[in-house]
Amino acid sequence: MKAHDAIYIDGAWRPAAGQDVIEVVDPAEERVIATVPAGTALDIDTAVRAARAALPGWAATPPAERAARLTALRDSLEARKDEIAETVTAELGSPLPFSQAVHAAVPVAVAGSYAELAASYSFEEKVGNSTVLLEPVGVVGAITPWNYPLHQVVAKVAPALAAGCTIVLKPAEDTPLVAQLFAEAVHDAGVPAGVFNLVTGLGPVAGQALAEHPGVDLVSFTGSTAVGRQIGAVAGAAVKKVALELGGKSANVILPGADLARAVAVGVANVMSNSGQTCSAWTRMLVHREQYDEAVSLAATAAAKYTDRIGPLVSDKQRRRVRAYIEQGITEGARLVAGGPDYPRERGYWVSPTVFADVTPEMTIAQEEIFGPVLTILRYEDEEDALRIANGTVYGLAGAVWAADEAEAVAFARRMETGQVDINGGRFNPRAPFGGYKQSGIGRELGAHGLAEYLQTKSLQF
Ligand code: NAD
Image 1: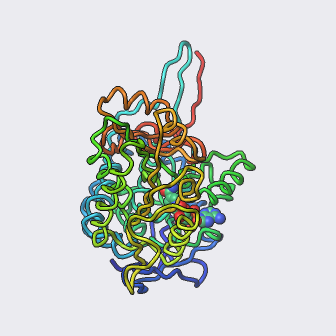
Image 2: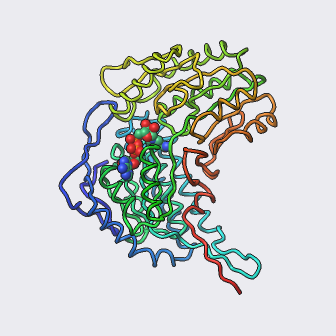
Image 3: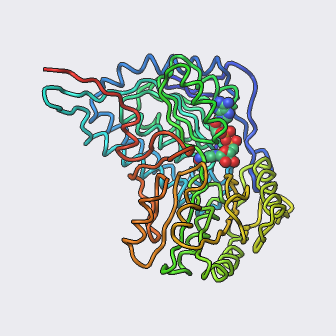
């Protein structure tokens, strides 16, 4: 696609207030492929004013009409799916088939789910002598990361539109091009001017200005725990609503009776997918001591097969960060059984698919989110030990349990402190609530639970 040398405010592309630009780099080629405006606080202010001006009209638009715009948005994303996939591949580096199957296709499904929800959701409830109105929260400031760059945008914008909110989006600086494509799709869907606005820019400049803006009623953020904590503090001080989707260190618990080969194969695939840049990745594999050696050998063999399948990491900064974690794992005494810290290619921000065995729960690589293709395998003694290890991090975003018997897996999953658990390889469900326990975040995205985040309630008594 051709980058817009502009930001999208009040239904039109217009120049940013300043001259600064952000360079977009193709991580496979280490080459600048485009520049986009680096919006400032002034641009954010203009965008928030446009969103506020559009709010009364959009909030009063009947849900059926909001649903019709969302259906049109779904269709315009679908019509652009090839361009979306190519754009994500160019700026994120993911292999084209993955960009097509995930980065382009999942947002279509999510937009479609909110078109249906907007039409069917009860925005009014009866409670005794009261009528409870579910009203839009107001102007939403959405700040999104680069790892699933369109999905994370749609997971905020679609429910906000369904709820009757207006939006200012500040996408990640590494992946602004697909956000521009999204703005085109919103425009073509006939969403009224000012309802959706896009300001590209740097996190500490445009992102911070958006989080702090008094005209924003809800800040919805996905990204690192460090920035999420700051945004939560700013929102708390202003008594403003906040939704945070942060990091994870999810456990893949393989109980003794499980199909070990399948559990390991799916587990490795889960970690290597998107080059490990997935907040819900099962980066800790927990295996019973009697099956441990077999699991390690299966995982090492499986990981090696991903060497030519995975894409580069998004940036040199991420590559250096991941390498530092791999080096730390070695220093702390974990046993490298696949991959390692050496960069496998001369050009492009690749890291080898890496597997560590003999990882103990207190090691840094078993506690901190690495955000790269790095799997840790931990040994447990019995179920209680497995549960202690699974719940033994500050995070709680996702997880998996494998067992011979589904009821046994469910019983274990009930005791896990985490927001999502896949049972024996259960499939991703774009309508199931997604979000974290503990420091993985506040609030839920996707489906009806995701819509509820953008609503506030008013009770009328009769
Ligand atoms: P980040 O938190 O710095 O960036 C996420 C978004 O926040 C971007 O749009 C960024 O511009 C914006 N931002 C940055 N600083 C800001 C500030 N002070 N105020 C407001 N907005 C700000 O994340 P990153 O640097 O892109 O990635 C670093 C780490 O974050 C990763 O290694 C990973 O551990 C984690 N991460 C998690 C997720 C997730 O889905 N949970 C996604 C991306 C990154």
